[in-house]
Length: 494
Image 1 (tube, rainbow, N blue to C red):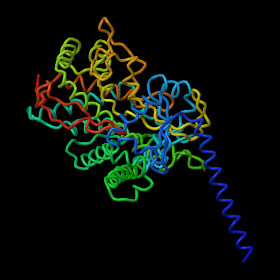
Image 2 (image 1 turned 120 degrees about the vertical axis):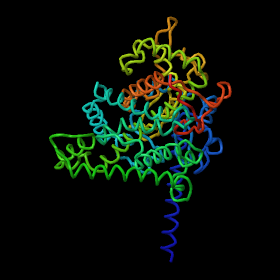
Image 3 (image 1 turned 180 degrees about the vertical axis):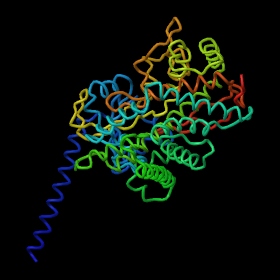
């Protein structure tokens, strides 16, 4: 009896010592981390954050704690970087240390560290290198993909003409078109615009993407360990992501049955061939799980971000008809009406190029970027970030840095024009992020935005249901993504 009592006392003493040691370590570490509001157990800084306006909440903390601070999203400890200087110092000057991938809880639920976008370490490096090379092999950055975009732009023009000037919601018109470009690369073919399965996929993508921007989506970022087991909108987002994965799995199975190793048709074929080449390598990253998740990464990223940017673009052009008129003038002067726009035209169209950049800057589609993670113990400025610390590089704060943009809250193409009206680059233009994990689809995205926008404005005037002064350009949601408000417009032939 005495022995068991002594054993219990010893266990309690050990547990107490462990708890005290943990608290001591946390406090010691806290002194080295950037400053920030004091967190409460489990809920962190939830009470100081507005999940409806998470970016604004973080910007208010910046006013108190400076451009580098620590915040606790529930139990997640995040170091937040605001403004060009802090983001550049981390992602460029200390690129290797900040090259890890943090959590985006909704997508992490499905990807679980697999695939090119949400992986880390050697897996991320190998999949990224392979993806960049394979996209290039299938024409990205070359004339081949430009012709594919031009062809798809032609289908879109036909679809708009078919509306006969009626007021329409452009969401799925645009997502069908944009998605078909990346689909032709990863799946080897485009979808018919009326394909019901295709429309269902686009609805799943839109639903899961928009969920990440909602208040509930931000709550899930904080408390996913509990919320993933509870009913709520997050379960619908999971269902949509699983549906997208099932579709990709079906496509992969079709390719496996018909694969010719000497003649790859698409990204999936190229990955399958690499899998065969490395089947004797026990440590290979080229296996079915990474194939499914990388293909899905490309499919989602190549659809939602560009189509969302174009939706912002149409809204802003209707709000600013003078800007639309100047693009019409430049399109007519440089391209005319008898040929399709080409990507090389942009060098003679500084105003249009400035407008596209300003749409991306103002729309700020991924304001917090994908979370980063430091790959080792890192000294940053006067702070110490332990290995594994998650980092939010606030791209939106760079795109609105007043040191680079005179009126950052206003839509103004002059932000990208010099005094002679020529296009002016800006180091703070970072919608595709920077550093080792920048979006490698940037070149494709830039080509799509230019060719789709100029082709549409070559053929149509945009007409709103409201007068310009009454058009509201406030975002519908701002979270992981910035979602434009719902609207309708008419495409009137020129």
